[in-house]
Length: 140
Image (cartoon, rainbow, N blue to C red; front, side):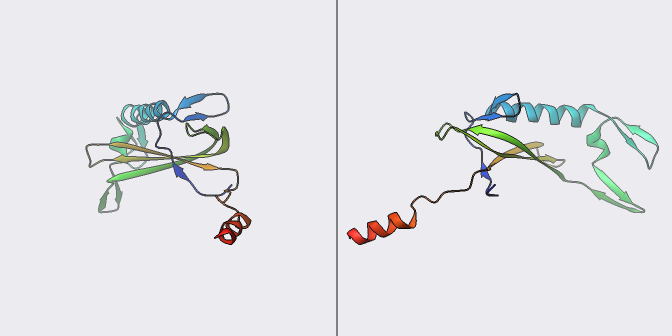
């Protein structure tokens, strides 16, 4: 793996997990729906108060440290999973890692933001090998 993640900004690229295939646009849509659903509709148990809160979003709006209450403005979730990608620009299927960065904001109108990045398992090949560059320079 070359550890160089590139942003998946073409919604028509295709991502393949073990058995499921998604266009990038559909994958983003499904992940947002799942996060929103779990964040807004599931409850959480607060061990401090020994009560169940109605929503995870309420449960994680703030933390209390004795007398101090700290408001949480944003939560960031990172996932990295194995996949293959088929880019519209060609090159066939590439094996690698998909990084999902999910931002959940308690203070902005755009509450859920999702970024997808891909890192190929294959080594990055230079555009022109040094021998080709030398030949070009010798001709001049």
